[in-house]
Amino acid sequence: QVQLVESGGGLVQAGGSLRLSCATSGRTRYVMGWFRQAPGKEREYVAGVSWSGARTYYADSVKGRFTISRDNAKNTVYLQMNSLKPEDTAVYYCAATTSMSITNVSWDYWGQGTQVTVSS
Image (cartoon, helix red, strand yellow):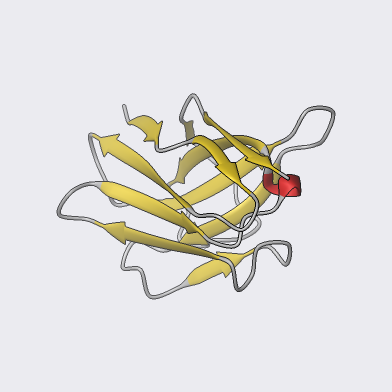
């Protein structure tokens, strides 16, 4: 069983930065992803990273502003978010999948989420 615990959310002004962390327990050879869900909207796949870190995915809405990375020695995945916009406001979730792909996959494990609020 894998447990995912997110941290690093908070309130930030537009243009600011935040770094989210996702600590994992148990087996760690997973593709990892970050999702977000704003009130009244569908959950959006924001970024993904392969186990080695060599392959990444970004949604068009965050490309060039967000960076996903992982430190397997620390069993932690990060999402560095720069140039934040009010429309980035959402609950951000960390997820893990046993799939080798980083897109079009079924996600097996989810964290409980961390709130990110960007004020204008």
